[in-house]
Image (cartoon, rainbow, N blue to C red; front, side, top):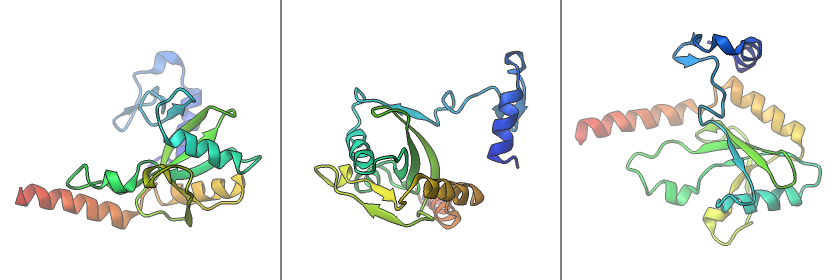
Length: 169
């Protein structure tokens, strides 16, 4: 299995005409944006979590990264019969008002968390990775990558519940 660093390094060396090359089932010419793995969040985005992220960064001068849950856990669990494990995203403050988010972990977090009441209800009170500095976020990312981006117990239980529901209808 290729490491993330190897994949990124190889992607930098590929010429545009090499878009037909594949690693596994993915074209190496695809970008994380094209694959839908990143989101740019701006003030005109109608995402209430944007305001919470703005407040998080405003309360921590000098910080430009955070890890938080991607959806409201209370409502995400009610919309589907077998909800997948919680998704955690890395948010990078590109400028004061523009953020980039990308998934880094799925499942029970492998890091300490804190809930901050930055919005009006529990869906606007995201859960953040507890980190005092950006360097701590980079160490958490290293841990996420070492564990292949997921809590294996949560993932195994989720896939088992999908199989079980297929058997029982």
